[in-house]
Length: 441
Image 1: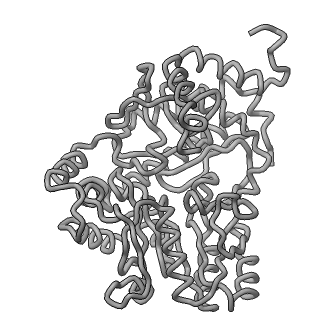
Image 2 (image 1 turned 30 degrees about the horizontal axis):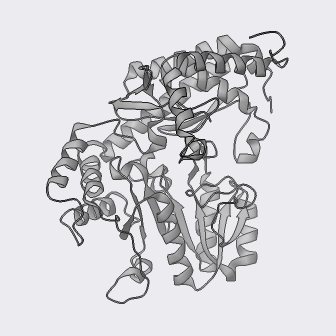
């Protein structure tokens, strides 16, 4: 790179160098990306998968490994943004899907598989007395909100800044441009006092309070128990329904994150890994609320051609009963706690403005010091540092998220985790001067 084009800012310069090394190493991914921009805007159908200068094209996966179109092998530390808890091509999942397909894919009726998965989920998550299947967590949240609006006869929905409940339910300080036009009241996350005041002020209009027990997409920000209990108490007080979005967090304990905190929602939404790697979502909870969807009474219709598709029903059952049992969920959460503790000890020891937040097997890197309680606390973080970490990890054979999101899966070994921690250590060594200049809040 000539001196005329070398950025003056040291972070920009480091990132430009990382981009150049990445581009040189991945000609096939670059070629595929450029060709596919003809047919898809940005060669993309899922925004989170794009990053500059172009995203890798992943060719195959096996266990905890991925291979890209240029033949590079990576250890997978993003696991399909929490859906891939089983890793890639687990034999138990593959065999269950093949067996289901041999009996016919589109059966146009109730089938032999959906009832046993529904029973397994209800027994696993006792707050879910009855449920219905959808094709995604997004759909599950939309249907849960619809159920609450109908059940209460009210229109207002309380949500929280930084919340993400699917492709059409994202929130900053206000709803995102793509968010469905419900009547939302957006409150700060982890602020129990503000929540109490606002819930009481708007109580007669509130149908539902929708919240993640840990905000995932905003950076693995755990909800404090006092805050979540304030929402439970407030919903009860004003006659609203509390909806816990556990699409991500249900994997963080044997019976979900909220149950581990001892707080029971009226409705719970599920998704991601529970479908065994297939498209999946579910919403459920109190039997009196879910009774609105009983077709024998004709109250609320709920459609979806693939809601009970045999591949998802088979894969989900196999995964929950053979692989991700309650005991396995607890063990994976413990591994994550130990990994995050080790990473934070490393950052503290090295004296850099860097930390990892989260619960159990989910965590996120942040380039600042001090407690992270809501997305506003991350406003001072230099996003370029997240990009530098991402490209450094790729160079070390570790595939993760450009936003610093880290997800553990069952096939990851102790040696894999040690390699990730070591790669963070070498990242600190390489970019110490830039990290020491990070936010010291």
